[in-house]
Image 1 (cartoon, rainbow, N blue to C red):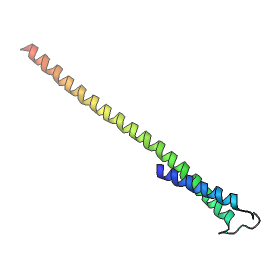
Image 2 (image 1 turned 135 degrees about the vertical axis):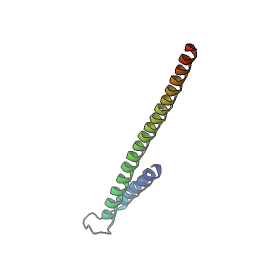
Image 3 (image 1 turned 45 degrees about the vertical axis):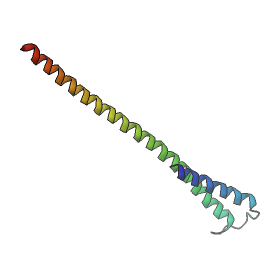
Image 4 (image 1 turned 90 degrees about the vertical axis):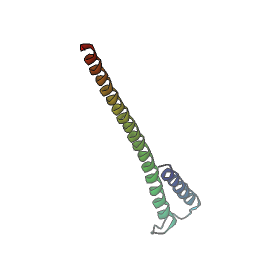
Amino acid sequence: MKSLTFTGVILLLLAFILLYFNDNFTVIRLFEPITLMGILFGIGIGLIIGGLVGYVSKGNAIKEAQIRRELKQLQQEKAELEKQKAQTEINRTY
């Protein structure tokens, strides 16, 4: 996720550098600097947003996995306590 964001920032900076050095804004063709700037800008913004969304979703997935582990551990502890309670009740009856 961090590498996507870094790549997006690099492409965004490259688009701004091309925009700064461009003097001709009249003709738009596929491989003209202005079109290339637009393509790089779009890719850069897309990668930045994609990296941030991926980072956030990964964080949420890690939190959910941790909650599941804690819940499983609590269920195991509850089962052990119920076994101990059953053993103490059996021992009291004898």
